[in-house]
Image (cartoon, rainbow, N blue to C red; front, side):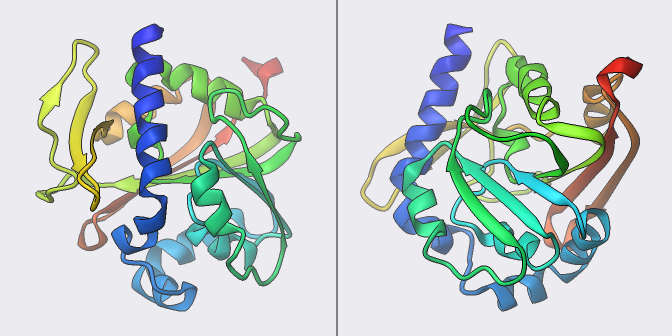
Length: 231
């Protein structure tokens, strides 16, 4: 566990340090432009989560929170890094009630329960393989019966920030990222296959659906949480 703790700590330090450049890295300018660029993915997320109270994990600077707020009555957006949360709180959220909370995704301390939906974008690829079950157990513990989960992440492609340069004994892939100030970080960046994702939720999720948008270099996994009494 201590090795995974180190991986998680380095990732948090990276995103805390990257906060001032986060939107630039994500090519984000405004919500309208983002929704237009990712129109088919946004439409799918709306179809799956509209009308639900949603718990968002690793919300970053709130780019997807804005998308959720326009479709969901209540969004609780969480992140472990105060640096990105401080930027997220400055953006405009039209529609639902939005609350930001500083919370570790592996414990979700002080996060209320129970939500009818959960969402995370570009997060699952950063979860060390040895901590995936722990993360899902914590997340599902904050969801009600019949809650729907939506994960979005990147497809593997030849990009300097996404190209892995090494693999550890647990099978985790790592990207080396250099910030504008010259600081270098090794960040976990896994690329699970559809089969691996389906195996990941076996016994805890049902009605699984996997989709890809190669032109946008994104995949989406959605499923309904199986109630603990049914397992």
